[in-house]
Length: 94
Image (cartoon, rainbow, N blue to C red; front, top):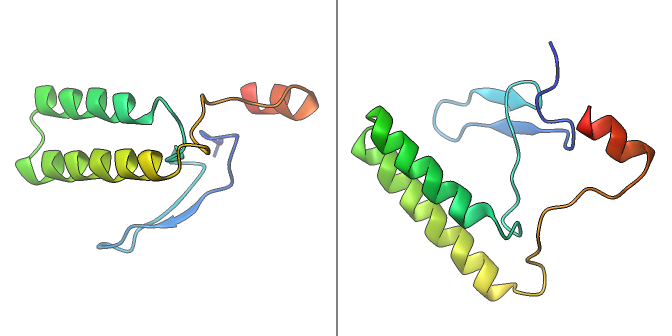
């Protein structure tokens, strides 16, 4: 199976269902990414448009709040997403 997220090796377990996920079926965004709150707001709007349940929408809003809180408390870590130039960047972008 092809990797979707080529920047990170991901090993995640869904907290409730215990389903396992890797870079082959998921994407990782970091809380320090300056664009993440806006990205999550757009995601919430799209979920609303698609008819997502209220519990899902509430969860997204709570997540936005946690990300904004993290960014406020760690302002020096917050930055625009980037990939360091070089051989590895080319591999990630392909």
